[in-house]
Image (cartoon, rainbow, N blue to C red):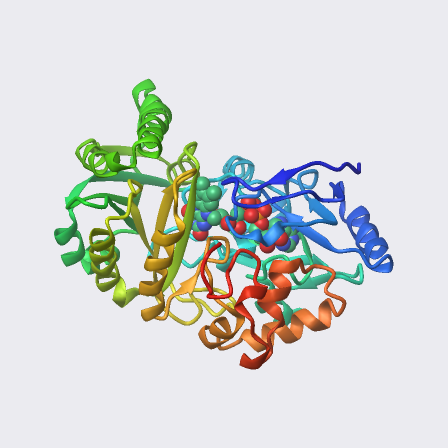
Length: 454
Ligand SMILES: Cc1cc2nc3c(=O)[nH]c(=O)nc-3n(C[C@H](O)[C@H](O)[C@H](O)COP(=O)(O)OP(=O)(O)OC[C@H]3O[C@@H](n4cnc5c(N)ncnc54)[C@H](O)[C@@H]3O)c2cc1C
């Protein structure tokens, strides 16, 4: 069961050499391992699919994966509830729920993540009447640092529940999750090209009149790709070879070739943006939700994504546009804009505010630091809260000002894990400053003394 190997996240931005990688097969084994590690003073990070861009799961001691703890344990279609093992990947989850006639109400744009990994960073999709995936959680079975198996829900250990709904793997290991599910639904996906100005002028209408609306703006152009998803009772479209070819070869293969061209000849970025805008296809298809929400993302990139109050979206997008044009950043990936309903989860970026999420990407292997740094300054001016799984340079002091329940979270974390078994250097730096005086930005791995991405 134990082995040592190099570990790297999806984007290649985080690498580590854990002393031990373990994959418990059931909760008893998991709890026993945690008790043993606690007794020996070991440090444990738990990994899902390794799709976070920040060093959340970097470990030089134990890296625990719940890949052997996957599957749907029970589905109660009447109550609209499903209990699933913590390591279950979203793709597998979607397929199994579908066999039971139910689905997750909303998803992000890929389904590779594990359910616990997705929840732990507040992964989200889009839709003003939908919260992040963490809001779908009705209860957890958590293995804490003492090896105790703790049930938490709004009724049992409610404070721990609110803290655990977005907790970066620092409160314990989520062994099981009970999710709210909805009857399986078909979605009508309509996609087309619009002008950025028109899209921003009609934001309110697009957001309110569609269940799920998002758009991608291509730098150096006026073009956006708009995506609208709405529930329908119409039958699913026949899957076409062309559709599959388009998703895999056109959206990924051709985009990879264009991206490599930009990496080798960066001044091609503007041309590639124009080509991408012109090739935005009209899409009109119907399928079950778990298949429509997600698409294969085979071209690797680095990403920064921020949550901002929804009402600031147009201003932020306009500022991003000015910034890219002013500094002539060599970027050909679009800026992605989505919408999420407010929630009451302590460390959720959507805490108590209806939100827009804005993401910037850079093809892997191309310089991204200066670009991200300038865009982050814009997010900061609009009370931006970073996505926990994506790159940012925010300090504990800044974060504590952005999250009203920050210290409540710290209190619960310190109570459940007084020895810091579940902390690595990155998280220790993030969660250690109790006052501004304690704060030293250079103590956050990956961030310089000036607070810049290294
Ligand atoms: C191509 C791509 C597309 C993406 N699309 C979206 C998107 O549409 N929307 C969005 O919001 N985000 C998106 N993300 C970000 C991604 O959803 C999050 O970073 C997510 O946390 C990754 O899930 P994971 O299973 O890979 O978890 P990991 O990255 O492996 O871990 C994330 C966190 O979860 C913790 N964790 C994992 N398992 C457990 C467990 N069993 N118990 C307790 N803690 C645990 C880890 O310790 C860590 O802190 C995307 C990322 C990529 C690379």
